[in-house]
Image 1 (cartoon, one colour):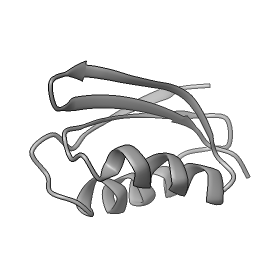
Image 2 (cartoon, rainbow, N blue to C red; image 1 turned 45 degrees about the horizontal axis):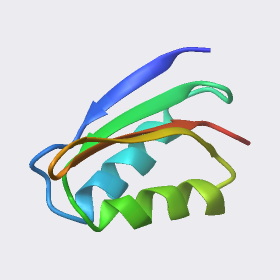
Image 3 (tube, helix red, strand yellow; image 1 turned 90 degrees about the vertical axis):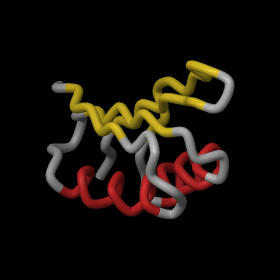
Length: 76
């Protein structure tokens, strides 16, 4: 299992989600993608996308006043 990083800080929604989907396509099942973001809407859209696409959220942390990081393990 490998963890990859995707920094979308400064990107407006929906780009953190668009970039996460694109990055996840390149990973193997079991790999993880850590996404750093500061778009408030992504606090809902990223976990929802992960659940709908069969991925597992393994961490979700607030890292600042308006900054978060979410780690998603690739499923299927």
